[in-house]
Image (cartoon, rainbow, N blue to C red):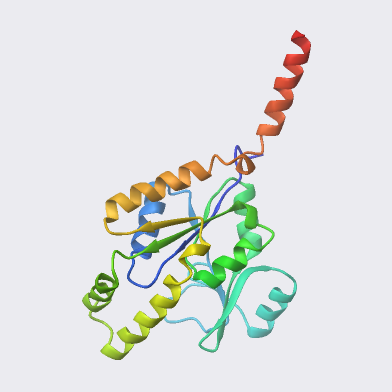
Amino acid sequence: MADRRGLLIILSSPSGAGKSTLSRRLMAWDPSIRFSVSATTRPPRPGEVDGKDYHFMSEDAFKKAVAAGEMLEHAHVFGNFYGSPKGPVQAAIDAGQDVLFDIDWQGAQQIRNSALGMHTLSIFLLPPSIRELRRRLETRGQDSEEVIAKRMQKSWDEISHWDGYDFVLINDDLDLTEKRLITIVEATRLRRIQQPHLTEHVRRLQQEFEEMT
């Protein structure tokens, strides 16, 4: 048995709040953290590899997987289904390996309500200001004004669900936010439920105590 059970680390934020950067930094800090590979019914784009970028599935196979309880969370987005397969995640946490999820508040809620919800750590990233969030989206230089306006509306929809997470960090200093994120992960790994060996250790302590009395 592994020394500890792995965590399902959910990192959510509005677009432009630094989620992708902090996800990369977290996995650079601990390379054993694996990124959850989502399943999707959309066709592969050029260069995408099945099992690495996504698990590509037919719509029929995806719906059967959902009906069989094989998806931790799923959603229908722009005509395609997306979801997180349960099997690989269960195997990872049983082996003491943390799995990182880059999902929205709806997916986070589904995972927290799933059979593996007790091993979930959810963290929401807030921008320092709406003005700064818009500036970050504009400096990407890849979206039209109309697209940016839609992203801003979607971002606010995400922000409105900030209070459904275990931890909330204001990302006004990337290095400081990274340190706080690592501290949260390290502390949560020590939760009682993440340490299956504790029960046996306490039994040994009890036996030792009884032998001495």
